[in-house]
Length: 357
Image (tube, rainbow, N blue to C red; front, top):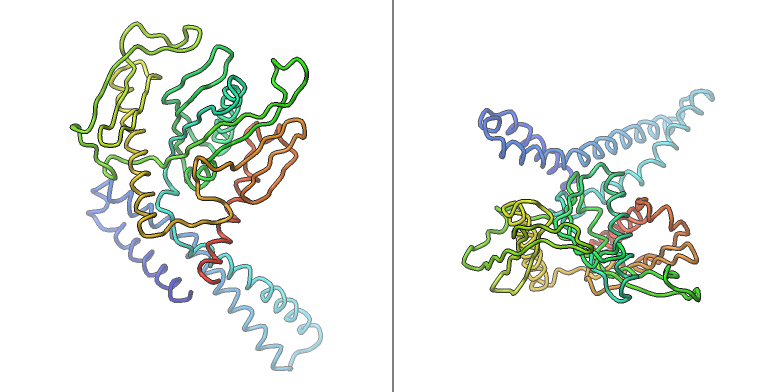
C-alpha cells in the first residue's frame, strides 16, 4: 500500500506541474482533464498526509514513554497522546485502503435514468411517477440538475415510461445502485375492499456517454419523425417534432419528444442511444474478461429485484444488503442518503474482500 500511496503523491505533483504549463492553460479541454484527475487524487493525498502525521506522533509518544524519564504529570499527557494516536491509526489505514480501491471511470459522470412501469397496470404507472418524484427530490438535495428527455404518461397521472438526465458531481457513483426491479406493496386508491396490491417497475441507470467515447455511424441510424402526444392531450404538437431513432445493427430504439424543436429532440435521442450502446459495449467487455463482480450489492441487472416499498408497514427494504428502514414517507420525499450510503459501504467491503484486505 505504501508504494501505491507514494505513486499517487508523485502523480499529483506531476499533474500540478502540467497544470502550470502554458500549453495546458491555452487548452481548456486538456486543463479540465488534468484538473479533474488532480482533484480525484487530492482526498488520497490528504488522507496519506494525515496518516503519516498520526504515525509520527504515535512513534514520538511511544519513544518518550519507553525512555522512562518523565515526571508523572508529563507522562500522563504523553500517555493520552499515545493512546489517541494509536486509536486513530487503524481507521485512517482502513480509509486509505478504501480510497485506493479501483476507480470506476463512470463514477464522476452524469446519468440517464429510464423508469418503466411493469406488473400492476395503472398502479405500477402511478408508482413509477412516485419514484421519478423521489429521484427528482434526491437530486435537488444533492444540488444536481434534472432534465426530462421523454415521457409517456397515463390518464390518471401515472407514467408508463420516462427517461431523464441527471447532471452534477459524481452522480453515477450514487445513482448506479438504483438499477433493477423496484416492488411496491400498498392499497391502491381504486381498491374498494382495502386489499394490498403488489406492483413493479424497472429502473435503468446509464452513465452518460460523451461523443468522443462512442461515435455513432450515421449509416447505422434510421430517424423517423412523428407528432408529440400525451395523455389527455398533453404535450400535443401540431408539427412532427418528436424523434424516433433506430440503431439498425442492434435494433435499439430511442424516442424523444419533450423538446419543442425537432433538432433538440434528435440531439437528446442520440445522447440516450450513445449512452445505451456504450454501456452495452462495456458490459460485453466485462463479461468477456470475466470481470463482472457478483457482490452482495448485486450486478445492476434490471431483472433483479432490488428493493420493496411496503406502505402499510411504512417500510423500505433493500434486498441486496438486507436493510429495512421504517421511514417510507421520508424516503419517498427524496431522502435516499442512508440507503445509498449503506450500499456504498457494502460495495467497498466486497472490494476489500476481493483484494484480500
